[in-house]
Length: 394
Image 1 (cartoon, rainbow, N blue to C red):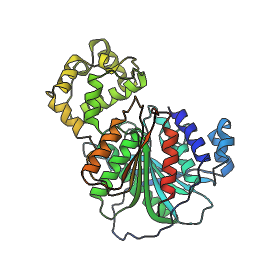
Image 2 (cartoon, helix red, strand yellow):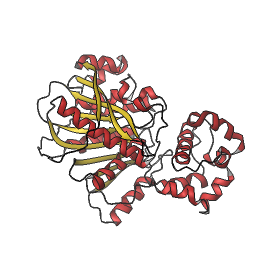
Image 3 (cartoon, rainbow, N blue to C red):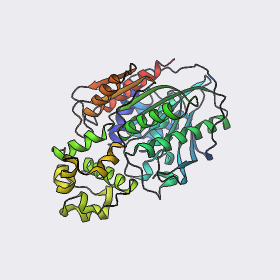
Image 4 (cartoon, rainbow, N blue to C red):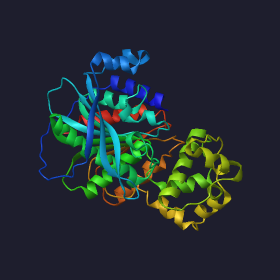
């Protein structure tokens, strides 16, 4: 999935011309200091960045990469889901040779199973390279690793947990602001946020947190959310009652969500409470790295299916509901992208979000359905749309 995402990204950027906003505003409110360190990892010229992407993609990349970049690893203070203070990390990327004031983009990455793909490592096939390509268009980019990767890789990742993802992303933005000031980067104070898949869910969670909890701390101008599982309750009910794709990596993600909620909400159940006896031992040993093919309905235990279907498993259902982020009123112009044939994160997640938001009176939310698109093939449309959306921000 990561290679496909990167290739779609390369092709998409070659097709679109993006401008950036130069609005200037000021925020005089004192904010918490969270930056622990910022380290310049690499400074790459345009040519070196193209080479770093790889020879197979170099000719395409050269069509749109406009500048070199400075890649910083940032370590900052945040809180884990139990309230303890920890140190997390992420990447801040600054384009070089651009003198106009730049907007800040917060890029929330999608699902990764390998720690080294986290943004702050800047590996060739990782999220830091992807964030660097965004920066060359003319943006300052902040990309959180999230809890569980990078500086916090000894902790479990807060997979698909609304508050865990949002808090780590918000504090990463605060750290990025400190880096911008420290490095004397020309920033126009605008913030744009984006992400796809887990990153789409994280982006919507971050948007909600910014709008409801940070006052005038950020000048959030646009949010682009792609194929996120915003309606967790309906997603769970669908997965336990209807055949799923059978894809082993899809199943690994579903298993990971269940394990995360069991841990964070202190349900502390044995694996046999969630999974059929034939798979419980393997999942206990391999956790989210278990690769099991077949419909999720055959992997789950009868107990869990019954408890979700008839509503009697209130502890798990309450944990799931706590991660619903589809039914609220966004203040910021928001675009939702989703493939109508997505068998990994079903389309109804974006459809029900639009309906709920409109019902509450939201007037600045738009759903862009990608007809016939699945989770992978819809990425290109998402990227093209997001770039155009951000390029028109004033």
